[in-house]
Amino acid sequence: MLTNGADMKKTWKRIAVAVSAVVAVVGAFVGSGAAGGTPIAEAAGGALSASSTAIAPGGPAFSIWSVVYVGLIAYAVRQFFRTADDERHERLFVPAVLSLLLNAAWILSVQFGFLWASEPVIVALLAVLVWAFVVLRRTRPSGTVEAVVTDGTFGLYLGWVCVATAANTAAVLTAAGFRGFGLGQDVWGVLVAAVAGFVGVLLAVWGRGRLAPTAALGWGLAWVAVARLDGPLVSVPTAVTAVVAVAAVVVVTLAVRARTGWSRARVVPHAA
Image: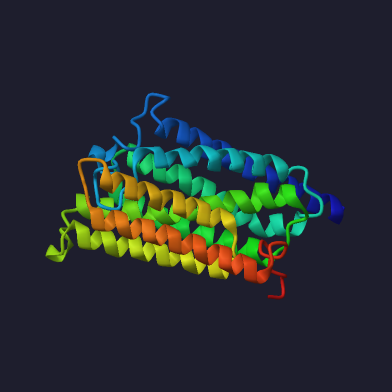
């Protein structure tokens, strides 16, 4: 009876993850404008468009969401068939579900014009993804499929949300009338891009050279650079800083990975 009860609990958890993934994907579909909603870049008065702030990435950057959502659906399906990875998926259950629901909540807050509400939501999403990253860092995937589907997906998710949080914060402050204490867009753009790069370096070191967070964060910063060189809001200092930040994160990631060993870089024993 105890075993049946435990199995039933696991089944309900798996269903909860699957339902949350569907909610997130439906929210993304609405947020894309395909279901009659307003595209995110045009919602909330265009506060999140590529020309809204000096740290806003170019429009094509958001295509990474398609990769993340495919990965999340794959994760939701895989966790129904897991065996060797039961313990890590059990530990990942809460942050995974919360990240999916917060994702949908962020889209809805922007869609309904509540830009101010999007900030605590995306900050909470970032915190939850850091939690998920801690779980994955401390547990070992059973094989390549698990490493790609679970670790890779949540790594991309975390790296991109780091950039998205910076862009969202800048958009919320700008919409609220904040003018940067008179420092100007170039100064703030440089500062925020540098901080994002520093966060990427920390993730590279802490994550033992994991590639997925670096790939997503680098992608986001690269499109920040593109948007600052070609568009209505030009800022060469911000673009240069973003490019340098990308280079720094990539170099540190590869250096850490080389030092720890490519076969060991993606995992850290639970006791670590």
